[in-house]
Length: 512
Image 1 (cartoon, rainbow, N blue to C red):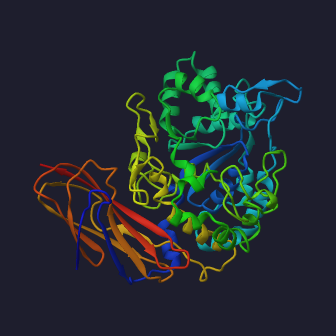
Image 2 (image 1 turned 90 degrees about the horizontal axis):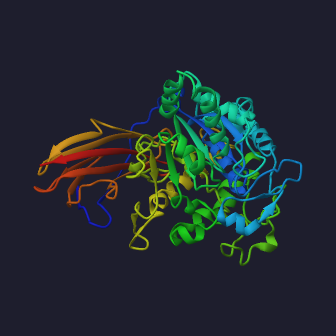
Image 3 (image 1 turned 30 degrees about the vertical axis):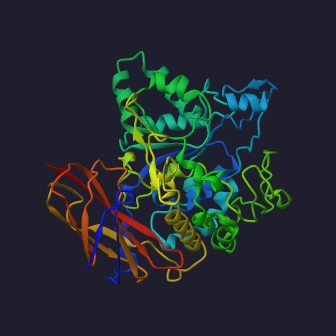
């Protein structure tokens, strides 16, 4: 038995390593994945090189959610033009100053998904050995649509993509549908505008409006055009939006400024090149990295692959195969169920970061200076650390899944399975003891490491607690004073070359 005391800065941490009984991989897969539980999602993307890299990683997780649409859209950084030479000036201050008047801008076209889906088709048989639920390449091809792409923020006309989103919002499936915004919100805005135009003057409007707001959740990475603030928010104020403007930076171009030095190896060429990009099949070979010789057609500013441009680049000095950016990946990280129960509670934090509900706009969850976690590397509260705290687990998980593209079932690593024994939500009184227990197993018969830690910034309970560890359980002794909500995370990681981590969250309401 070991006893630990919660520290005000870090929360308490408990570690116990054990061997468990092991069900078969097939049993694990059927328990872990069920199509009825997978969340619906549509991706809108402007095709930036970091979107391409996010897209490739997302395909390796395509069994974790239902990809119902892949929509080409525009943004302040990328638009096609109308083919008539019509000049356009950005509404956004940054790109207005950078580019001035343009007739088109860095447009990568509407074909870049095709070679990626072709490569996905090649690795699909291997991926499907390792987990159930991967869609076929043809299923994904069938939901690729072209949205509003002529100019930044163009939402005046219906498009194949906007009509597709409209139909999904109006269909009879009432599960939430997450609209991922990797570029501008204009194609989503056009879909909503079309719904408004069709129904607002009818007696069905109230019912249709309610259906849309019950289903739609927008996950936006920054504002990359003005259509959210100009149209969606004023006309659809009840549509939920998760807005990430700070935390994504550790997965974006300036990652060297955000990721702590001890964790930067996970983004450097040694790890990215050897463990993910090279010798992992045709899909990952198309992943953009520094100095790799690749060049995206249509974007003259994509010089990252030029090996002569590695020194003193915009965001630092880089080496071959260093990570460039996946600034949009947190939008789908949020949808991966690793046990943190963040999907309906974005304020609880998870692989997609931590967002809190706006006091002024209750249907908006956002990050920023008011959402800071204690960064143990800098000993300061940090608005990016709610995302940084998960980067090691996320990157190692990516490397493990990269192996799925080329390895047989028995050769690769697979995530442990962990579940709570007893309730995950408890109500107790100050001074009481709580016994938290998990059951964990590993399909590969790897040794497992269990840690219990307090996610202090999420809860409202501020008192120190004492905990005693006994195998896979933790006895938490509460002091006689203090009330509030305490979040305890049971973190289970297998001991493999590329360890995979899963969690159980216990939420304890402490009264007087």
